[in-house]
Length: 297
Image 1 (cartoon, rainbow, N blue to C red):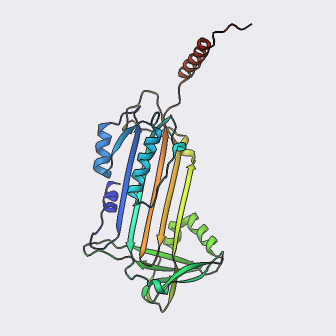
Image 2 (image 1 turned 135 degrees about the vertical axis):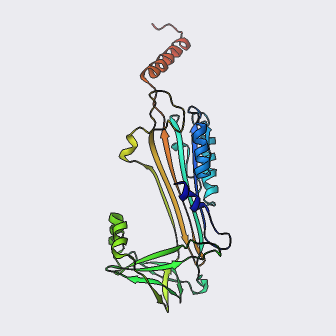
Image 3 (image 1 turned 90 degrees about the vertical axis):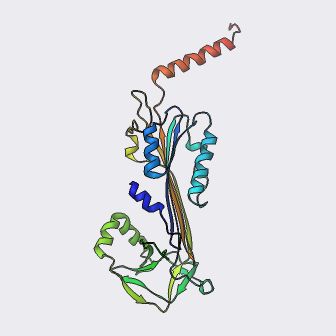
């Protein structure tokens, strides 16, 4: 994973795509971060694991995390968390941010962009057009077009975007279901054998998508997490994932593509023990009794 992070964080400053991959770890002060873990995330992911006060300064912690996300995504994603995502039991927040910005190898002329129908809803959206040669392939129920991004002079990595077009105007849902069911198998089956094709005209939609999904629940989230290598835990403490938040944005225009994504894991510490609950209960009763010293007839 550290090698992946290193390759993602690298980018050719001579014109290639800008790609960043960042991780953040925020731990409630009840659980001191182990120096060995701090060193690990620093060396492997160029990240910092820091202690915050989720119990008493939740708003400040949320503001710090949101500021980090906004910075790592070049302002594309903001306000990803609010006070509802933080609870007095919150022990840990893990965050992962991705950012991409690339320019087309052959940019589109904005003057040629025009409104056309987009299906299956048949709505009018701006379409970009060009007359170039690109990698193209036609398959059983869809066509594929690959458009490359500009690469840097010293960049050995090459990036491109693939556009898939269903053969039928109402075939988008079926194609999405195919990919959701077996995306790797579908790509493998067709092998995406694309060939260089000269186009007189082709049309690509200009778009911006926003995706926001909060309070995601999975069965594995009920299983206690092993965090002893990360933080100091008392015997019997078993934190669990309480919430997963995802937010993503992608914009495609005549110049290229800019995209960002954030995934956050909110991990709860152990709930109060029965003894702690009883102690709190009797403390409340005692306080009420002392403050209400009138005789009841």
